[in-house]
Length: 235
Image (cartoon, rainbow, N blue to C red; front, side, top):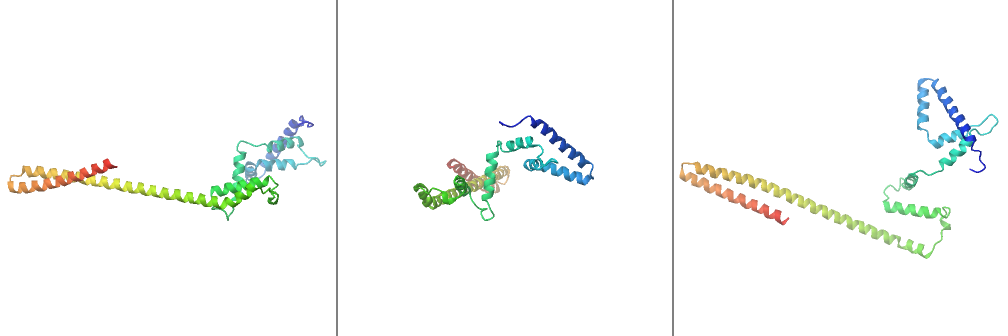
């Protein structure tokens, strides 16, 4: 700030804020719709647009108003804030994703950004780029690298589908085992009930027939439960 009279900044600042206050009071005297409209404009006005309007204000003599404050504002607006690099990256990516490039993948986007950044070092003039042997070899191998990357992605996708198919098959197997176990337990319970009824019957002949049927049901149910347990142990 050498050669700059910083003492003028407070005075210019007070005059600038007083000017804005007067404008707000003047807007309050208008009708309600106009006042609301002006409030919305002020509320959503970008900071660079606001300072651009302030910088265009002149005195009756033709001199610029608030020259000291404007100089400070221009310096402040050039400073990077914490998210400047991230936001700049989003802006560059938005410029790359045109209506004809909406299906670009991240490697392609990163490649375009790298090339654009490298070309900008030479005034954004491709004819000024130094084409060394490494650059030529890189260009020649770009298609091969692209095919290798697509092949790896295809292999990873195939493996993911296989794993998903195995998980689904295992899930169906578990569901079938649970269903079989539930049915076998119900069948075992039914066989035990039939056996109790047979033991209480007075007609020995009919009781014997019913007991044999109950034992057959119980054996089948226990066999099915044993198969379920063996399947669980193997899993």
